[in-house]
Length: 338
Image 1 (tube, rainbow, N blue to C red):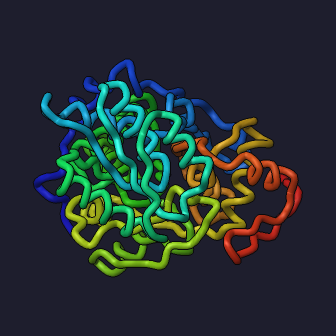
Image 2 (cartoon, one colour; image 1 turned 60 degrees about the vertical axis):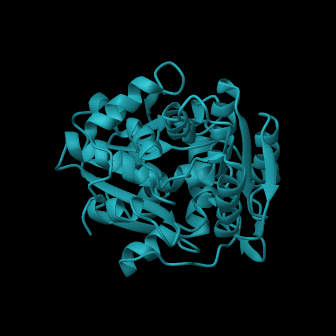
């Protein structure tokens, strides 16, 4: 596949950086205590420091900034963090927002979105069901739909993360990016490859229900069964009409790596015990790839801690080394060992 002509280029990503300046930019980029474990400098981009707790705010702010002055409100489908970002950005602009989600979204994320003044619609058991409701609202109620990933404005906004990392670390040899619908991976890859065409970029996701990974392998959008995961933010389909993120990710990602729930579990523990940080399972897939040996770093490496909006009861169980039940799939716990 090739990068579509409609994909945002470096100029559009730099314009997005100006649009979100002072609202969602400049998150910390810090060295990890795990660097010694992997034998190379490891840097963590802390999108967990965003006001909404996740990177999604960048894309939402940029997309909403591009709307005309007469828009009545916005709608979106989300697995949690995008909805929170849209709600936050809409509230800042005084717009009505309606967020559509499936029954698989954790209650903590649903309540976080409601707290930002958004209307919440729980529809079906898949991201595709939620997407259908969001499209209906746009069609029948005139709301502007803010797609979670397959949108030039959203992609450009997420691309500002890649811009910040590569400009801060010109010596970088490997960039590890969580992979879901592809807005983050596509945006970061567009920015990073524009500045450093030789930079190796790896997308990482869970090994159960990973729609983008399956779609890249098939060369077309593939529907997968959505299942509960420690990396729940990486769940959901990519849409049968996906026009941007699939071809961009297929063209620019050098590799896609799949991780077990146990590997994600261990990486969450490692981040907590070694770096003293708490983040979603989706945030630690880069760390999981390195610690599991599925990804090898031969020079400085960076990854993104994408979000911190999770069920703290589950986090407490993981840090205590207890088992976690994911809707019938049991993740066997164990005390953390370096």
